[in-house]
Image (tube, rainbow, N blue to C red):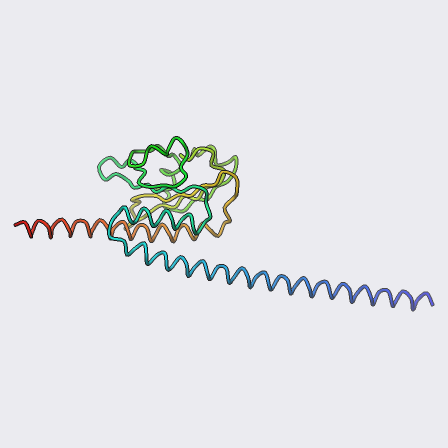
Length: 208
């Protein structure tokens, strides 16, 4: 009968719909679990990197470990590490990888980076992408997406760590990863400077 046929069809469609919804929920749970596992692995990696960075005793070692860690954690194309000059407050490019042509010859020199100055004034990590980024003029030429994280010590910015991509957009969660890495870098810079001062004093005492 027609009514019985309609009931059978409706029941079959309802079962198919329920099955699809169940499969969709299972897939969502699996994806959420995989994402959680990936985040946990990233946090464990970040903690290990933090220990390695803060254990460095020379500033050059700090710069090298931090820039390599930033590339590893964000899969960025380029990275740069600025430190503020104590006398002039200018930003000095201390290290970097895959820098654009205007920056590649400026390691150890003062750089003009408007976005870095704004980020350090705000003392908050900045993530930007696309056309809206151009008005801030990041130093890395051709940057489509960037993350800028200030190094803050006792509420005073002492430097900045940035990563950049020419095409791919950075996921929003990497903003927190970069912020944590910048905090480790700030601690490492202070430790390395203190170690350097103590070493010089010990050398002077030995000479005396």
